[in-house]
Amino acid sequence: MIISFLSQKGGVGRSTLARATAVEFARSGKKTHLADLDSSQQTSAKWSERRDNTGISPAVETGVYRRHDVALKAASNYECLVVDTRPFVDISALDIARQSSLVVIATGTSLDDLEPSLLLGHELIHKGIPHNRLLYVVGKAPSQAEGRAAIQTINAWQFACTGTFLTFRPGYSISLDAGYSITETSWKTLNHRARNIIHDICARAKASA
Ligand SMILES: Nc1ncnc2c1ncn2[C@@H]1O[C@H](COP(=O)(O)OP(=O)(O)OP(=O)(O)O)[C@@H](O)[C@H]1O
Ligand SMILES: [Mg+2]
Image 1 (spheres, rainbow, N blue to C red):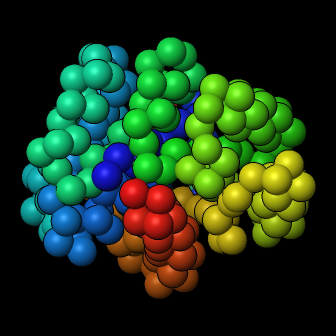
Image 2: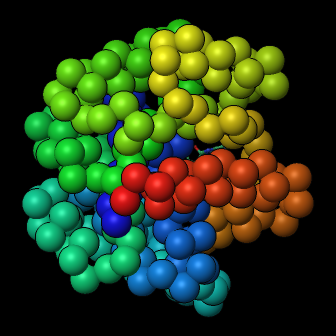
């Protein structure tokens, strides 16, 4: 099963969601691999290294790939391949989307973030990705009202979105810096919110695999 994380803009939480999804699949006993396609920044690979250095369980096997086709070939060796892509959608991202059981589109809440994200969804549908393989996640919502409004806008465009949004909280970035995922912070409420989102992602991916 391939789950890919795409976004038209950078810094919206794509890698954050990809890492947590990989952690939860690994925790459930699935042979999981996190493919970091951002070979210049390698942020997910570095996060995985921090995780290993601290000895956090489960370990998340991660690889950096310059070529998306090489990353996709790795899928046959794993039960779950989580693909963390670069912050723009090009031909390689479309190829990844075509081969994914689920394409997760991470977006912020402002119109500047939402509009390109929604247009990306339309482009993917136009390029033949089935509607039910797209799932939006609102990340880094500055307030409850803005998170809720963003979900309403996404639903109004007839796209599926996780019912829970990720609030902007330093507890998440502190945990990521220490090699933990957003489902493994020291704060129960933050973990609960993040787990709801990752649970939705895993359930949808399994349903369309
Ligand atoms: N909900 C949140 N609250 C606070 N900080 C967050 C949250 N989600 C992500 N971050 C932080 O925001 C930054 C960007 O997140 P992330 O790396 O997941 O985004 P990205 O879309 O993968 O970015 P890039 O385009 O650079 O690859 C990171 O430093 C991360 O720790
Ligand atoms: Mg990233």
